[in-house]
Length: 245
Image 1 (tube, rainbow, N blue to C red):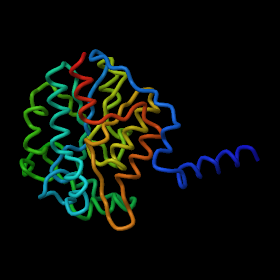
Image 2: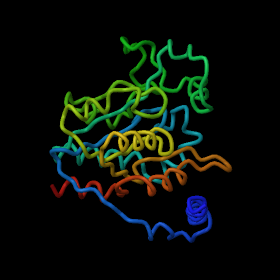
Image 3: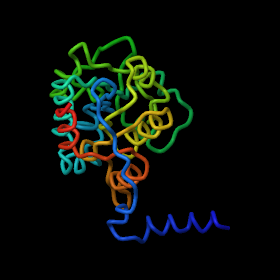
């Protein structure tokens, strides 16, 4: 009975409390040390971040409002200038992935619109400038031979790729997390990294999400980030933190 009352009270806080309700929550924060902290970016790809991408019609407003493209650029530049290791967890689909027999609504949609499609895991034919390619302005950071590009995640989280292995092998136990999209891949990466024992700070305006009538992915993500992330930083706070090391 006591447990049910506690749950009801928590739901009431979220649904009916004023906008500053989270002020009563602890803010654990995350200490920064370049030797064991990485910047992790999910899906910095054309299909999410370019006006020519297949999702721009539903994410473009959020990307533009948050200045997401420039903010991700600022994070990557700060990481490179201050010795912070940069990791990218991309999303690719190969022809064999279209043989899946079931999926959730967004999985089915991604397959239907050819999102992140590549011709083969062993070929870059047609990759340059495609929806699966990096946004052009990010290529100097991502193709410098130092950035770790993991194997692709296949649904939303890093359970299906080698991100955690790559982080562990480099002695990383703290992560600054940003990228696309907020309530899907970013949130899924946040949850798995926390379960794997990492401290995670999410950069709130270096992400964006689909917004359609009645469904606001960005606001949903911000609520969940505040509940579970060790810290929520703006891009300016993250850049200043990395630059102060």
